[in-house]
Image 1 (tube, helix red, strand yellow):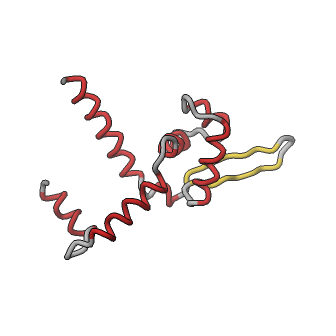
Image 2 (image 1 turned 180 degrees about the horizontal axis):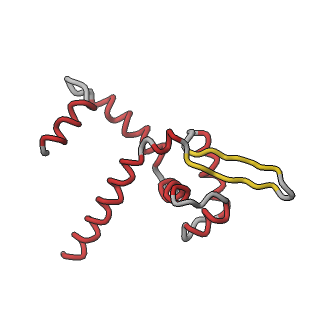
Image 3 (image 1 turned 135 degrees about the vertical axis):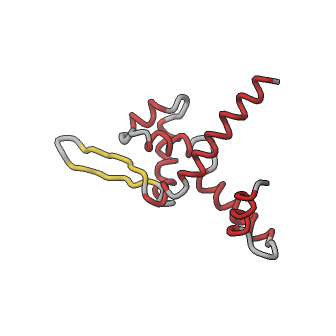
Length: 124
């Protein structure tokens, strides 16, 4: 670990280390953003896809039922906001919340790591 990582670890981890607390925090994070689809849905919404069909078209392989279920769970976890506008037809839009944006840095790091990993595997 470099100095920056050591400093960050010191700010996050308790002293002495509490493994039970760390495991619970990791489990909570995985529960909220884990699974096959959630990060892809967040990425889609953050890229400007607001309507259900736009989100669905931007994620290859996701079914209508799965997207509906994931959006409901994500709304319950305050990651996204669902807004219904009454016009001639009902307009439903999904947007990311400030709470969702609070782990934007984590998602960027995951994307960076994933790109590096893909390159490393190609070289092998």
